[in-house]
Each structure stands twice: as C-alpha cells, then as structure tokens.
Length: 77
Image 1 (cartoon, helix red, strand yellow):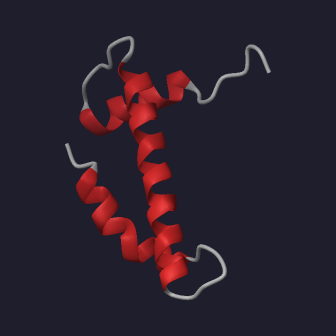
Image 2 (tube, helix red, strand yellow):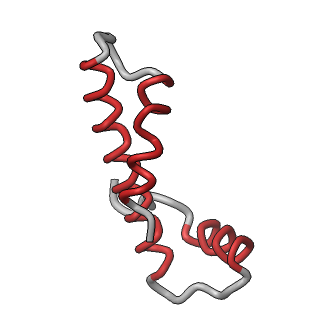
C-alpha cells in the first residue's frame, strides 16, 4: 500500500518529548520506532522458544513475562 505510514511520526515525537522534556531531531523518531520493533521481534521470538520448552501450544502471557526481563536487558542503552 503506497503512502501508508507504519506509525504516526508526530505522535511518537510528542510521546518522547513528554517523557524526556527534550526536542526530537528529524530522524530520531524513526530510530526509536525501529528499536521498538526489534525489541518486540526479539520478545516474541524468545517467548515462542520459552512456550515450546514449557510444552505450551502457543505464546502465552506467562511465557512473555518470563522472557521480558532478559529482552529488556539486551536492549538497555
């Protein structure tokens, strides 16, 4: 779909500014979004592995909670 945006850039900039009390440069919101997407991809991958090891059929909230701390540690800047 040409012209469709993956995320609202203005909203991301407003959220970052509200939390950090700093202005965001032109491409910083793109980097923040990409980092977020990598984190989510890693979280789902690790939760899937945890779910399989636990004998579950699919990813559950329990499997996501188990791997959240490790995934956050990997992406801590």
